[in-house]
Image: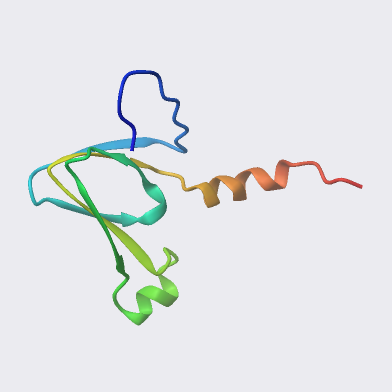
Length: 94
C-alpha cells in the first residue's frame, strides 16, 4: 500500500494492461500478473478447479480474483518469466 505525497518508482514487466472494474465485476488471472489496484478493489486467491487444469494448464495451482469497483493493472510477464529470459544471457563464472 502506498499513500501520501512523494514519488514512487515501479518496475512492471512486459506490457501493462489497465482495467476499470464496475462494482461486483471480477477479473480472474494468474497471481503473478497483478501489478497494482485501487484500494476500492478486493483481492482473493482461489484454487484452480479441475484436475486436468492443475496438471496440464501450465498456469499454476492458484488464481487471483480481483473484484471491483476500481482500477486494476496487470503485467503481461511475471518475475519468473523474466528470469527465464535473462538467465541464459548471464555470463558463467569459471
